Structure formats: C-alpha cells, structure tokens
Amino acid sequence: MNVDILLYDGFDELDGIGPYEVFDYALGFAAEEAADDETGDGGRSGRVRYVTLDERDRVTASHGTRVGVDGTLPDADAADAPDLLVVPGGGWSARDEEASAWAEARKGDVPRALAAHHESGTRIASVCTGSMLLAEAGVTDGRRAVTHASAIEELRESGAEVVDARVVDDGDLLSAGGVTSGIDLALYVVEREFGEAVADRVATVIEYERRYEVAE
Image 1 (tube, rainbow, N blue to C red):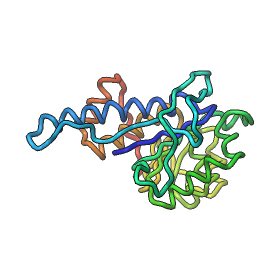
Image 2 (cartoon, one colour):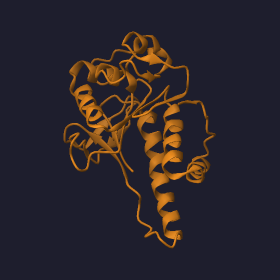
Image 3 (cartoon, helix red, strand yellow):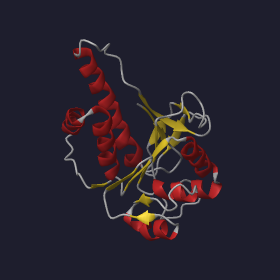
Image 4 (spheres, rainbow, N blue to C red):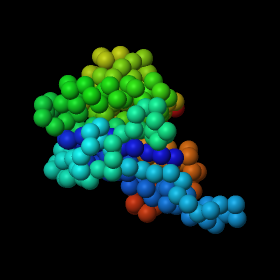
C-alpha cells in the first residue's frame, strides 16, 4: 500500500503527522509478519510519504512546525500514483488567507489535483477540514462525509451528505472529523489492509485507545 500525505503551508500538524506515524508503523509490522511467514521475503509492503504539489524542501504547519517533504505528488495517471491520498486540514475556519486549507481552496491548485486523482480512481482520505478541500474539488458532492465540527454546515451546504460519525467510509472516499480522528481513520485503513492484529499492535505502540465510530 502506497500512501501519500499532501502537505501545504498551514496544515494542522496532527492531521498529517498522526496518520503518517500509524501507516509507517503498520508497514514495518506487516513486513515483520511477512518475514515470519515461510512464503514472505520480509520487505516493506509499500511506502508512506509527505508530498507537496510543487518541489520544495519543507512546509510550515499551522502551529509553526517545519516538516520535511519527501517529494511531489505524482500525476493522477502516473505509475507511482498513491493507492491512498491523505488530505489534512488546517486554518479553514480562521480564514487565513496566507497559509491554510482556506488559502489553498482559494488558489485552486490543490482542489484541481484532488479532482484529477479522484477521477482516475485514487482512494482519497481527508482529515478535519481537509474535507473542505475535497468539497471545493467537487469530490464530496452527493457523497457521505464528515469534517471538523466548525465546518459541518459548510460541508453540508456544499452538497455533501454529512454523517454524524468520527470516521466515514464511502468507498473510494474516506473522511474523518477533527484532528485526532485522523489516527482512527488510519488505524481503520490499516486493519482493512493488514488485519486487526497489525492495527492493534500499532495502537498499542503509540498508546492510543482506538475509537470505532466508523460509518460504512
């Protein structure tokens, strides 16, 4: 499973870093299980990366954390396009015009990239107000989704079917509510991809009590 987490200046730290840590642990644990299996070679079962749309060394998150970038998001039809594209939120309700999800929605580049990946069949997951970037792209129109409590009405007005749940699974579109719910979303995906034992092991090592409020 190849996971790309799309960063931009002003993204909320935990929206992106929480899922990254979950997926990184999961890929490592899955590799260990493969090594223990007589038929496995012990190699990692994919990648998790921080990506941006433009080439750059780092981005600055909403609380000032500077995060290094691994590369740029591949084109939607590229051979190395991700299996799962994660979109964090940040700064939407504050209407920060310089560095935020709101600013990226106004610029339009991120919504266009999300629309292209959605049309090509990439599974997309949003955390917090990352859902509003998907709404700007038209991805959530008529789809079941959730976002941070501060933007619920905006998401509903955009044409999405808002669901009262911590995580919503609508097939090729996943969404999580506020901030820490991104960890639950990632653990849910890990359980689906690698099994309950791997998901539980990740939750144990990060000392996180899983919340199973997933609307499928």
